[in-house]
Image (cartoon, rainbow, N blue to C red; front, side, top):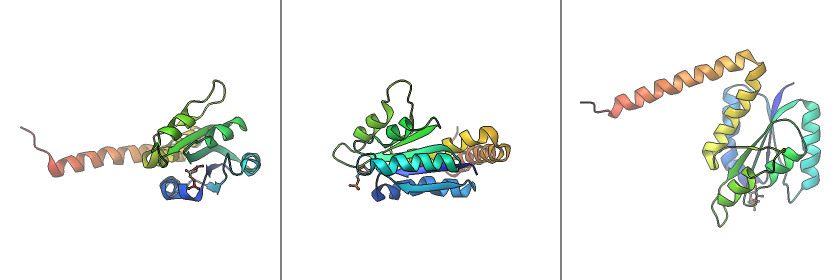
Length: 164
Ligand code: RP5
C-alpha cells in the first residue's frame, strides 16, 4: 500500500506536525507517523526508513528543530523523495533548523518547506502532489481544493473590500 511516512525528532514536534497529519486525514491519504531522532536514536531512524520503504512508503516527511539533521539523515538512507520541515524553537527560533534542513550537499536532496505551521501543512500538500503523479483521484481532489481556496479569497475579500 502506498503511504506517506512522517518522522519527527521529538514528541514536542507533534504540536506543529499534527497540522500535517490533519491534512492527510482530510484527503484520506494513508500515513504512518513515528518519533525517531537523528541524534538521540540514529539506529531507530535507520531501521524505520528501511521498514517503511519495504512496506510501501512513497514519500518521507521529516520534521525537526534546532540542529535539524533528521531530514538529511533520512535522505541519506533512501532514494524516495524526502520533504524536510524545519521547526521553530531553541535560541535561534528556527533559523538553525531552516539552514540545517535546507543546506544539503549535492546528490542527496531534501525538499525543504517553510518554517513551522505553514511548512507542516505544505509538507502534506507536497507529499500528496507527489503521490498524485500516479493517482488521478488524488490529483482531482487537489485541484478541487485549489478551486475552493480561490473561492475563499473572493469570499474573504467580499467581507471587507472597498473598491472605487
Ligand atoms: C530536535 O530538538 C527535535 O526535533 C525538537 O524539535 C528539538 C527539541 O527536542 P526536545 O528537547 O523538545 O525533545 O531534535
